[in-house]
Length: 203
Image (cartoon, rainbow, N blue to C red; front, side, top):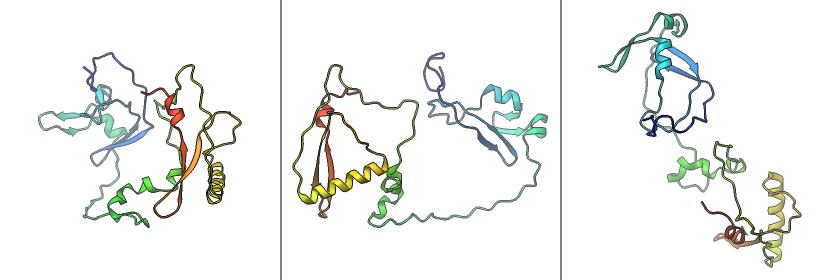
């Protein structure tokens, strides 16, 4: 079977990394690309082609590379003098974010307003919202708003248009928009997607 547990010959490799620089030991360094597979037991596999190219002397009993080939001495091994490195123990200070409890500092990116403005990158399997064939998108309903809520809605629409999160539309399909008051008295915008969820294909 293959490294990911599947029978040999099943599945295809569809993802490859950008060129990465790998260093083995103090001096052996090279750059190449890796194929990406699901292999929790073997995070990195160099393979037979790599062994043929570098032809290292390996002690399989000790699990160590004892000596590199002449080709490596000419092309892969650095000839710069070795500089001794001394390690010290240190603790990285977590950034303090106003209003964020200390136990959540390691999740600070999840609370970042800058990160919230960025869409996730496209991946090999992007998700799509697919509707049930023959269904009609709902027209929604209009919720009455107070003067304070109307002003908050106007501000919300202006901000979301500026971010590029929404855009003007003439479609008859719509979802209801209203506000829920938070504990601190501010207003949380809510969009009623229940009608759309009812005709969305569930996976």
